[in-house]
Image 1 (cartoon, rainbow over the protein chains, first blue to last red):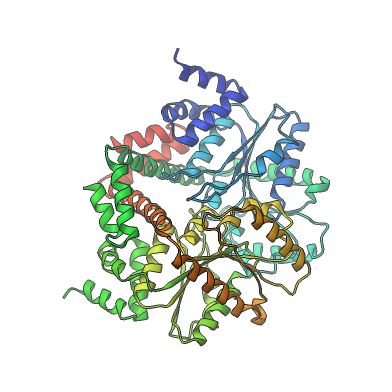
Image 2: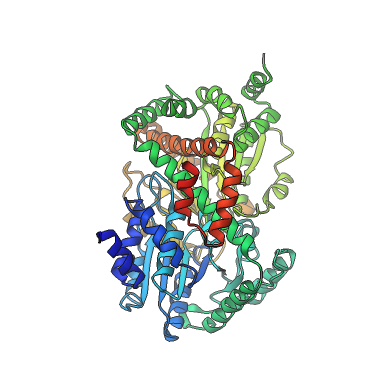
Length: 311
Length: 311
């Protein structure tokens, strides 16, 4: 038995340390990550995967924590993946983890992990869906993927969940930006958090108006749930709304959606693999440094440089 | 003379229609895009490129419009690129363009373009920096890149600008999310927009506290500018703050920063090219459809599927 196999076995038995090691492996694209995922993949499909997104400041973290506690009371094991954007040039800081560990982190049935760094090879989205698959295979009944940003990558990640939750706060619905942010169309369930604040009714009306304009291919009417996460209010309603969409889509034919996700995932992985193969060639990284220097000094351009790398 | 050459010539003469066609070309990755960019690249470096990001609802569009009008009054030509996230599976709607064209779009010296769709090949970030280079080569003195989302892609794009502006609103600074969103470290200039609202002083104090913790390698102290974009207040202060950072960094040694940007750009382009080469092979798209179907039905896994494509 290789240590690789025993990692997979321990992972499939749900051992938190094996889960953590496996996620690190897929995150860093280490040797053996592909072999691991090939074993993990057939064991997935049992977890309910919930994606949570929304504007910064909407209180997503509190909401996710309270939802996780609610599921815990039902005796379930919960995985939380927090997708944290970080800067491409420096790295970026993660404050969230340390703070959250104080409330949830001592519970062995709650696994919390931040996915932050995107390396040169891209792959944050790919690493996140792999991490979700690992938690799924490890027997976590609920996996919550929370994104911090509201960008392209985050939207892609949330769309791979079984149920996507979009979190808003009162007073933001009046702004066209909220529509433009492209998150309206992805919500299976909408939450107006901080619902003890002024302007809830207005935000709710505006959201209803927007949703009535949207036409979903599956004819689902996205429910709007009002919560005050910090006071634990509305969490049960949220769990019910999530469950009701999950039931709804299980009845329907969702093979097309799963196929679209599979295709996207395949392309992400393919792109990453192709780039890694080129960068691992002897001399490529020196060449890359030299060409970047030439471009910075305007003695070369990126298009000619790429041709030179591939020559 | 081929029509390709004449497009480049007309572009370098600053003709708006040639600029629009050239951007479409690089956006779609059409034939000739690489040849075009090789000619464009040596002509860049004259524009001041301003990146603007911040939370949805912060009023970025109004601020960008007012800043553009301010520069117009100085007789300059302005390019505005609006990076709009869209969903990977459906496409997503663009409302912004149509609305903005009513205020700025009739002025021939203002060029407005949304970059929205990211295709299968990725490349939104790459297409955006190429579009900026085209506007630069076409003689636009100021190019403003505005992002709608606050995600990984958006942060990367804004970091390639000469001056990055982060827009906040009163009452959001008290939330840890704002820090976690990873946008604090990229601001060369901070704006508190909607500064006629309650809580400005508190947000300013909190922002100052956060900035005092940050350590920039260039020792720049990011100024905080208060604006009310809808009433055109504070716009001149913002322009001054932008100018002062631009002057500051021109004096300093910023070759390292330019090299980091060049390297990132090179990797983006390389990845796109490698994937396109594989997908353009005969039979790959049929294979991709079949494999996606198999994965959706759990008869295959993405890792084995990628190996099959590359076999």
